Length: 171
Picture (tube, rainbow, N blue to C red):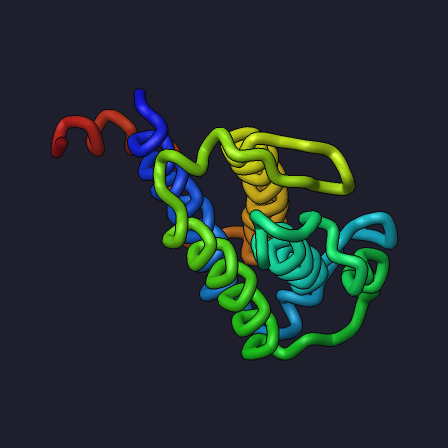
């Protein structure tokens, strides 16, 4: 796989990760987006706030500034509050838009350029892998929380349990 193909593939994977989060947020109301299992847990609204902060910090001026911007207040991203569904959706969209705009401005030749995250040099490819892991981790938390909240009313985001054979038969 060449660097151009890699950029295309990682962009598609990130779009897929975003889609899982989109479908989770769509199923929940404002109160549910602010639910958390216990005091050690983060609500989906808090996870979205954190991801937004991370995406804006990492992908704004990616080639000219450190990915940990001095004006980012990471700790405040984890403060609970009661965010309305519209606010959560807006934060979610804003973060992803910054990331996808940065990716649209890249081509395969950028993959081996060095960018900084917290002063540490990474190739763009390494930075993308780092963030793919980070974003997937948090979207997985969101999906898990959504399942806990909705219970039997959860609309599955993949092949429903017990329906794999049917799914593959339909092709």
